[in-house]
Every structure is written in C-alpha cells, then in structure tokens.
Image 1 (cartoon, helix red, strand yellow):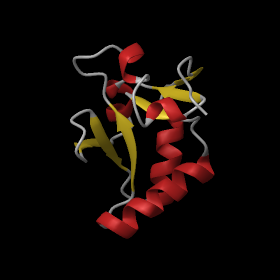
Image 2: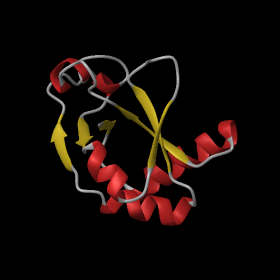
Image 3: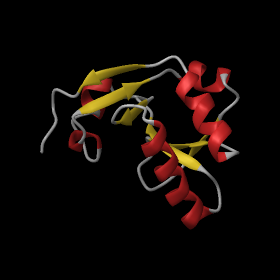
Length: 107
C-alpha cells in the first residue's frame, strides 16, 4: 500500500475529517500496488504530486485491526477506515511502514 506523504498526525486527522464530511466515516486514502509495481504506481496521479511516500503492507494495516475498503473511481484506490478519529490515527501511526523519497515527484 502507498500513501502520498509521510504519516503525520495532523495531516492524517485533517484527511480523515474531510472524508467524514463527505462519506460519514473517518478514513484516509491509500493505493494498492495490485497488478502493478510500486514504481509504476508512484509515477501516476495523484501520487506523483508527493515528494515523499509512505509504504506499508496490507498485513501491517490489518494487524492493527483496520479494514481496507475499495473506493473512488481508480480501482487501485482504497480507504483505510479509522473508526474513531483519534484512536484510529494513533493505530495507523503504529503500523509498520517506511517513508521514501518519490523519485517521480513533479512540483
């Protein structure tokens, strides 16, 4: 799974609040490298806009009790349903992950 940017408590909470305003659930966006390489995935919109990317496995996300819900028009887009906002953000930050520089970043 790939998320644009680093995992930042403030940004995660802001994104989750935006999702709640539209969909009625606290969730954040991720993209699945399902059938494509991560290299291919990060060259496309919207991930190319981010200077850094957070990588985590589906197993790491599910180990914290999260559900991944396919969402949006892009078949690779999923939402991580956080449940409770503050507790969900804290649990997501605990997921094993790594942050990398996006070599395809376009400013």
